[in-house]
Image (cartoon, rainbow, N blue to C red; front, side, top):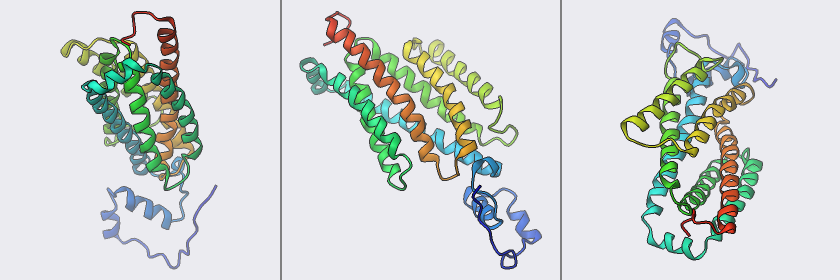
Length: 265
């Protein structure tokens, strides 16, 4: 395992005052201290502060992605131009879904190229956001389901990020799974009983993917370094987006090819 050695004679010992200042350090201070002490840079052997910060960054980025798709879906739904284009060229949905599968494969290959992987992840998210929103608008009744699924994903990711601020339970074992399941059920009940949003197929699929994301983050905590959070987010996205692309592709082939009345176009 890769470690960084340092000349201990050149490293000044921490005084009592320094120890007191390091009681609740930030992520930068903790990383600097671990490097100076020659500690491994991998999350599996890092301090709990570093591990929580890694998890928090992942879920905050995922929440921002869900919010951006949510906003884009509202904007596209109000556009007469988009509706007219989909009415005359329904095959655009299938093209975008197939392209999404290809782009996802490419993103998975370049996800470790730093520092370009950050901008590439943003571009990849925006492409998939347009593809998903346009696909949803091609089918009647799916727009509300999409909004419900995105609201579910947004708030769930925020609550998972909040979990990392509490010092009692680690992001390990069954604690985050139980917490995530309880939060998921709470959001579903609140959105259906308080706001009257129906639980559709997308919400069920989103619920499964939310729980799966916890297992993905488990894996990253065992193998990644604290600086690999963009790669971790890319791994989650390149797992979820292709599933959505494939689902819309099969749905579009069935409806557009069969000429049923379930499609708007």
